[in-house]
Length: 273
Ligand SMILES: Nc1ncnc2c1ncn2[C@@H]1O[C@H](COP(=O)(O)OP(=O)(O)OP(=O)(O)O)[C@@H](O)[C@H]1O
Image (cartoon, rainbow, N blue to C red; front, side):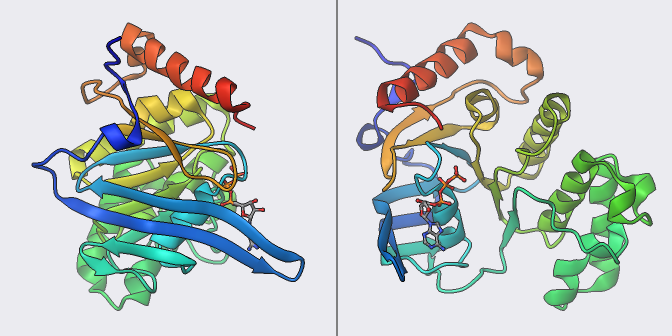
C-alpha cells in the first residue's frame, strides 16, 4: 500500500542535501524526585534540518516540554547528547529563541522594552537591534503599541510581543512550547498564518509543540508524533503542502487526509489527552 504522507521515523531520514542544525542522539530523561524516579522520555534519535519547521504532537505528559527544554539548554538530558549547530548543548545557546505558552512579559516594561530584553541581556548594539525590534513589532501588527504596557494589550497581542522578543536577536532557531494554547480559535488561526509567513520569509528553524493536529499540519514541514509517557518517537509525517499557506489549505484534500491519518494514529494509541 502506498503511504505518501506517512513515514515511520526509521523510514524518514533527513534529506541528504539538508544540513542538520539540531541533532539528538540517544536523548532520554528521567526526573529524580523524592517520590522516586519519573521516566519521561525514552531514548530519542532525531535530526532537525536548517530552515525546517518541525512540529511535535503527543499525548499529555509524554515529554514534549521536557524535550524542548533540553534542546533549549534549560534542562540536562539523563543520557545521550543534543547538538545545536554542531556543539553539544550544556546551557542556553545564544542562537536560540524560546516562546512559552504564557507570554511572560514584564508588566513594568513597555512592549518595546520587553522585546529588547534579549538585546540587553546579551549586550548587543541597542541602535541596530532597536531598529530590528521596531521592524518586528510592525511586522506583527504591533507598531502602534510599542510604548504601551502588556496589560494594555490583548492576549494575542501579548503573545505576538513575546514572539518578537524571541526573534529580536535574530536567532537561527526558535523553540515554541504551545505558544497559542491560551488564545481563542480565531486569534490562533491568525497567529498560525502570521508565524508561517514569518518563518518562510526569515528561513528560521522552528521546533513547535502543540496539541492541535490541524495546527501541526498547517505549520509543519514534518510532524513528529510521540507515544505515551515515557514518550518516544511513534511516527514522523511529512506534510509536503506548498508554501506560503493560507487557511484555505485546510480544505485541501491532502490536508484533510493527513490530519485524519494523524488523528487515527492517536485514537489507535489512546487519544491525545
Ligand atoms: N520537574 C519535574 N519533576 C518531576 N517530573 C516531571 C517534571 N517535569 C515534568 N515531569 C513529568 O514528566 C512527564 C513529561 O512532562 P512534560 O511536561 O514534558 O510533558 P508534556 O508532553 O509537555 O505534557 P503536556 O502536553 O500536558 O504539556 C510528565 O509525566 C510529568 O509529570
